[in-house]
Image (cartoon, rainbow, N blue to C red; front, side):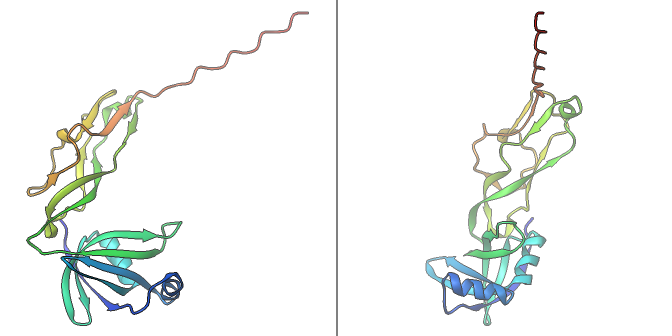
Length: 196
């Protein structure tokens, strides 16, 4: 279940690409805070704090801006090309009693017998759209694959480990995992010997 982390930031007076680059060279990350019928706020955060927040898996933060604290959901993170540096972050203001809608990753648990038998595990969807209280956002939704044989599927409707209070909005017929038969390409025939 999501835990709440405190993070501090400062107002950002100027915006724009060149200003954002300057901030990043100083070890800072530009961010926006929006929602709850309030004006959007441009802020700046320490790069190390953002990296730590993302690594912790926390989705809800106590966002402190010059002594004013509010609950916010980490809504989106923009990475550089190599996914090593955070370029920008968006936060959505939330109320602890408010239900939010967002995507969370799935986590596969176990080893599928169909893979051991030579099949290939296919995962067409890596996230689920859910709705729950802002302070109860799960880090992931577990998908048990220990009984998945060749040719079998796991649909959203088959999920067993959805936390209480979480509503899955992804359609129930959506395939999350499938063990497919490995297709072996036929060997090309050797060219016939030329007649003498």
